[in-house]
Image 1 (cartoon, rainbow, N blue to C red):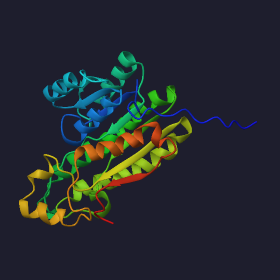
Image 2 (cartoon, one colour):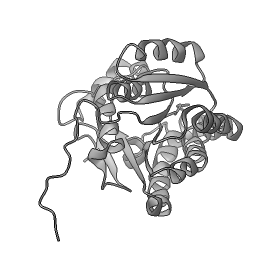
Image 3 (cartoon, rainbow, N blue to C red):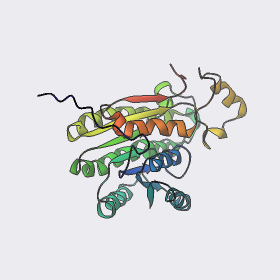
Image 4 (cartoon, rainbow, N blue to C red):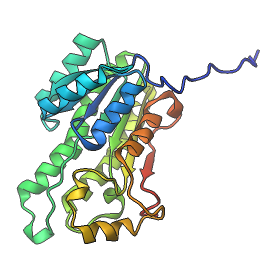
Length: 259
């Protein structure tokens, strides 16, 4: 017999109530905005970054709201540091439900001037770091009732940016990683998706020359740059039950730039 009873309604104010969520690169910018948005929705957020002072200040701030936070100072390109995050989630928190692979860096230069070290470092943090995060934490999700992984790509991974062959390659690689991991982990109830922000007003992008910024903003159909909180809202959607039947998807948050 088919039941006609309506499905339980989601509480829009507490989409991640009692969930454990790991956010890398949480000390500033988009990562900080994601952590704040998750905590507002009742999550315990594991803040991961190299800047311990910034993480501890953020954790104190989040503790005053409906969520909570803990701090793990870690280099996402290090397998050993990922094991530290894993141990914290397993031993101190009892598991993990959400992973946001947000950590990334840029080392911009045109091809003739880009050093091998700068290429490798960007790939190591953005792409290797996300792969390590998935490999290390997905077993905890498998041991539970599944989970959600969101990888932070970029519009640069779709259209490419001059002077950013390393960054564009890393962000494009995250799309392949997302789709392959979604196929591998879907049978365990683990969803894997990616977000591609466009021109977002952060400390990183605000280092652009004013004329470069203006030219890029003119390419946005909505006529303005986005905010970290607008990206965080998209990540929350994918991480929460609202995105419960979405996996292997790439969500652009770009104001239409790049279409």
